[in-house]
Image (cartoon, rainbow, N blue to C red; front, top):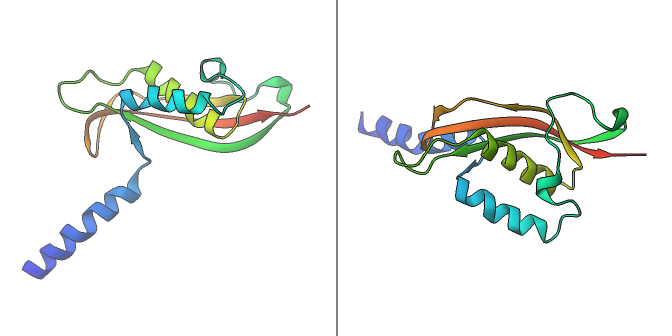
Length: 130
């Protein structure tokens, strides 16, 4: 029985780590913005996040599918906002050199591993082509 428990306790963190994307806390988003804006051509705030499935008349190249999670650090912190989730999508897209995020979906607050509450957002990072 003890041997079985050791196996479970060893495997559980590995399993949980594989289940989700990297969690970001609100304070980390602003640090990411500052770092990205030093190397990005487009300021993070100007990167459009759209719910539509097209932009620029359909003239774009898909760079990557994005999935982000913004979480609160403790039970006493406020729940992550939709604006924080949108901003995290902008940061992830800017890291890839994208011009926009399309198909954006920002989820509701939910309980997630390693946090009292989190908000998941997804989208597609795209680069405009002529």
